[in-house]
Amino acid sequence: KLDGKIKVDFMQVSSYGNSMKSGEVKIIKDIDQDLSGLDVLIVEDLIESGKTLSKVMDMLQKRNPNSLEICTLLDKYEKRKKNVQVKYIGKPIDDVFVVGFGIDWAECYRQLPYIGRIKILR
Image 1 (tube, rainbow, N blue to C red):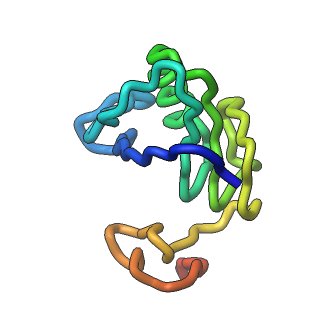
Image 2 (cartoon, rainbow, N blue to C red):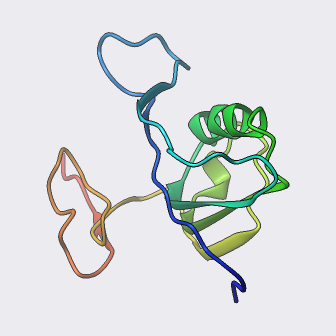
């Protein structure tokens, strides 16, 4: 349960793209709030390697929040490459490709009202 005055903001980052170097994080939309002294909760849909999230955490930590925590709907812990501490996990999942409920595959299936597994047949 979250008590007190709650502010919501959004940050859009990308670590993908043909013109980007491996491991580079591009901020597409930064947050508008001053984080100084605030308790900040990062809400993710899916965490895999943790590489992008680790860099975002470093960026946000430099903005002097009182606390900085992470929650995620889905967690692929087996794929973790960076040690990011996730405080709240909706559901741990195996290393499968999922779509729906906001998660897409090549801009498709994001609108599904459930989370489903993509099985690629070869």
